[in-house]
Image 1 (cartoon, rainbow, N blue to C red):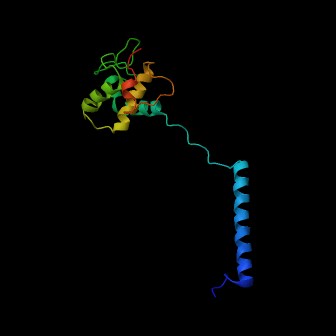
Image 2 (cartoon, one colour):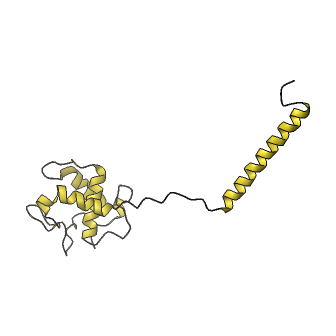
Length: 144
């Protein structure tokens, strides 16, 4: 006879098994009604701030600290300086191909999206809470 499957040992094994199941059910019931502590959520990625930092390090030498233009054209103004691009997707296609002027295509894809978010925000056309990327770029306008 295998240990635990016959006689007194079988009853003891069944009682242990039932106790474990009962304990498991009690824990599950308690877990469903009790508040479980969770780790605090990480702050949402601030794409505009990241884009501004990248703009200042890689773009400002030609476009000015505020995008007002220097040797490069103005990118931030009261008029729509990005009007030549219907949406963020078109702006990305241009920027990622030819900017920065002294090293075209040298930013990562995400860095280009971050700079675009900064420029749209600085021109007051980026809807609040919108993160710009390839998934929504065609719907994000570049003009007021």
